[in-house]
Image: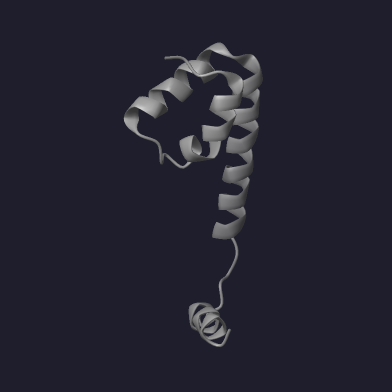
Length: 76
């Protein structure tokens, strides 16, 4: 089985998060290796995730944030 572009795109986020089965990971990788358009989309998504990760790691998180979030969720 080979994936087409639409099937690959639907799995892209799960592929980036490594949440697919090993078989699905291989199918997506095979498609990305052979499709320039999907490969470009994948690289863009990967750059965005890396930028978010760098930004978040540089951001100081208030020590009471978790408590405030849970308190807010409990009062809904």
